[in-house]
Length: 122
Image (cartoon, rainbow, N blue to C red; front, side, top):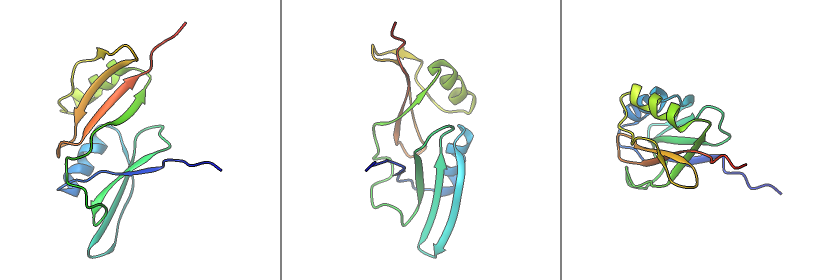
């Protein structure tokens, strides 16, 4: 039996601002639905990912900005860095951490992300 991680809740203060942020860096807006007055579910997926994030109202009780350690893997950390900067995101310059090249950024609420280019082993 497979156990697949397919959705991670990211707590945010302003759903529209967060949705705009994530779509500006290339995440696809898959769903935006309010089944009740107290719930708004927005699902966003990074390009090529089998796992999505969700933001919204009534989705999680976690504090906005409390998520650390989210990581995406890309073919080129430098290209990802350039895309983030072009979208107005404050990202760290690419750094070789020994287990890959990384750039780091936070969303508008302070949720922290790492972007990794896997090392090339011969």
